[in-house]
Image 1 (tube, rainbow, N blue to C red):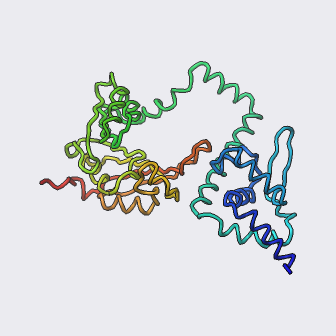
Image 2: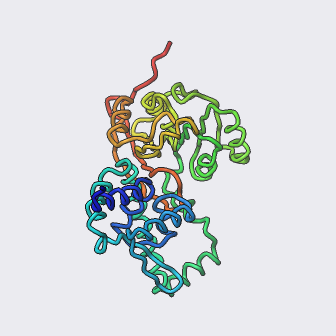
Image 3: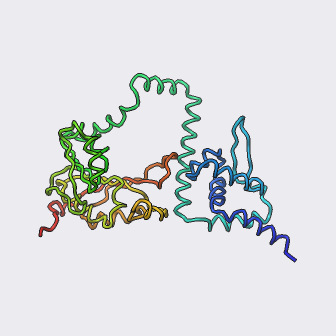
Length: 326
């Protein structure tokens, strides 16, 4: 005959055998959330989240609190039966990857920050009216050009892996010269249409490990969501270093390390993001030092992994670094 305690444990394990439910509980153990907020944290459709919440509510895992037309849910830690209380710590510590848990937590922080913004907007009506008035008078397109004015106007900037030329087009009005390099003809065709009319913008076909540019021709090099596509990131960074003038800057934007292995097949990614240590190693191989590496706040509306931005500067001893010539 089955031990009733064991039977209860097996029933709870069956409920939690779905990884999404364990992720839900791990988040709701930290914070009470609405369904929409939870879906943004988990990067899942609301219908999927609602379906799993219903199962967890039926089996006593959640509290549901109603506020007017909306409701929030949280882990029912204080009312779990003894079997559930024994099962949950084991499942929580072993459910899913540490990377997924960390990304969920980062998005939770961002969602809660947005909630705070919404709350302050509700109580700060004057500020809210000013924002609306400013948008009505001036639109919303002035912030980025204003920030770009911080870039020295006499700079030459190279955008390595420029894609369809969005960054090239944004930089062209504020710098002396901007060069985009990409090896994909279709991308460059779209980029040429985008930068038409900017006489100081140039687009070149080239491999990022052997740039069609002379030594020391640029003040800054950008690699924006590019390194994870490259078999040898250090080789591309070395080429970026070669084309920089002394004191030049390399800016890398890319994904933090993640476990979404399907990106290798679906999008041709060579690397599942990068740790800070990996970026420092690639930079050192290329003769660069990391002078700042910042993990960007996650966008709750985004579906991909978190991003970081790194500032790399050439080592003084490498000021005349160049690619070996045949």
